[in-house]
Image (cartoon, rainbow, N blue to C red):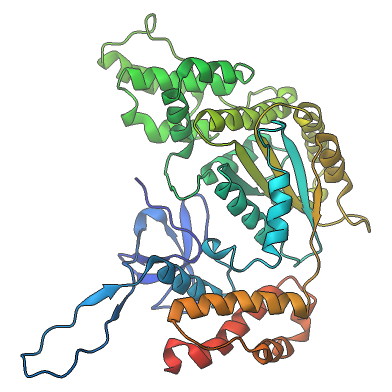
Length: 456
């Protein structure tokens, strides 16, 4: 299984040595190397491996006349390792995914809101909800927290950040191409998450799964093809190609994949008449049909996730405000997609929830385009407040709790350190989107000077 790191994780490059992951893309990670501080570099996942767990010395043994023995080293507890790696990420101003719960202000309030807008068994309907707030209010962090909550509730999650250029809802297939590789299930990493969902759904009952996916013909066609190849024992050599294809990669066309796989089927004694299968692209070539195919793909994978033993699918879409800068042609395509979502998601009995993050437009509290989609589908909007001293105080308390766990300190929380950190921030930072990152980096540096490894 291919190794896929996450932000805040300690890794080792065979060529450049150890470092910490700052951010990841589909196939590479930006790593802050220990040997080159302040100069993060981009490295392919294949060039990285996880660093061995940190170990510490046991207390020295009592003096004895017996010959000296080599001190044994014990591994840290898993929670302490996680806490240390989280603190390392915080030194760069990055909130690690594994500590979202500890470092989210008003987490309980957010959790209650998210749980209310997941596609529960009690209604079974798909929803679109929104997270709205000014620049720097923590929307991206909140979207990560939503995925944590959804995963803990038993949902498959996936996320995408639109850019208004190379990743835009005006290009549905391009969005899915970025979305599906992020697909994940709580406490389980996989290099082939979509293929795993298909196989798990097949194992839970092929006939019942086919019935559940009857309305989603493209998702169903690929499920049937995967089931046939599994039965013929021809799946393993093609898992990477199939994962890419069902994840909307443009590396192979349907015909190319079909031909490549069928040659293997023939070598295993299969033939087209007795074992037919057809792979289908999730987004068709017809421009007018692409919005419909996009929605059907999301709904189909949500139903597939449920048949695979999960509660459904939760998708987060970040940075929607950049879409308002599209050209007229792209804007028409985007609005066509949103109208299709309004028509097909509202009241649709599929276990899908979509959360969209955006900034208010034209002096309004929310985004009128997104607000209409939310209203039609029966969702809701969660409004984020701007950062204040009180919210910084709550964030600092979370960091302090992590620090105590990471370094086993007994130091009590000191509000004066928070005030000192806040007052030391550059005035320009207080009005910008970097205020939280600046505060985190400065506060951790202050705590380091008191309780950090170098302070002892």
